[in-house]
Amino acid sequence: MDPRITSVAAIFELNTDLLLNCLDGLSQGDAQRRLDGGGNSIIFLAAHLADTRHFLLGRLGHPLANPLSRYLADAQSIEDIGEWPTLDEVRRTWLAVSARLSEVLDTLESRALERTGAHRFPVGDSSPLGMLAFLAQHDSYHVGQAAFIRRQLGKPAMTYVRRTAATV
Image 1 (cartoon, rainbow, N blue to C red):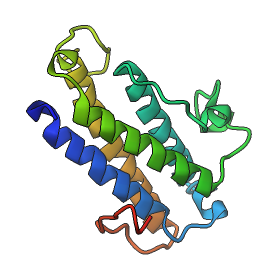
Image 2: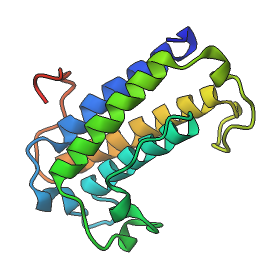
Image 3: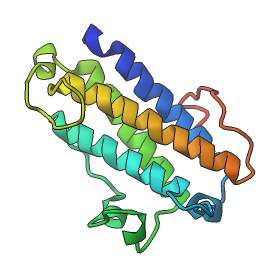
């Protein structure tokens, strides 16, 4: 792995576990519930994060088919979602895209990180390296939202327990 992305890859791996921890013990109804003040549901956040990781893989030149795209197609906001994936579909998709992202980051060549004008995210670095940094922050932001919503639903706080392939 290019040493410039070691820390960013670690954040992606941590967020993989943390989102799963946010989903633990939720029913489908819990996951789809929106707080009285409005905003997103946990399942929307999880589907959005999985979709974003698929987008990232495509931008890095390693596209992966997204099984959640049929739910998210043409949706500009949560109000545009007509049918929701099951929590199991979201978990499976999250694990698959996360495993693929880990593989890609592990083998990404240094020169692939240096291209300028690779994205238009609100950071000064328009290279793939800047895109990775921004999307790691984006991941963390939405995982934090899911953890907050989880507590507001009366569930125990999200844990920082790390998972292994055997426990998922």
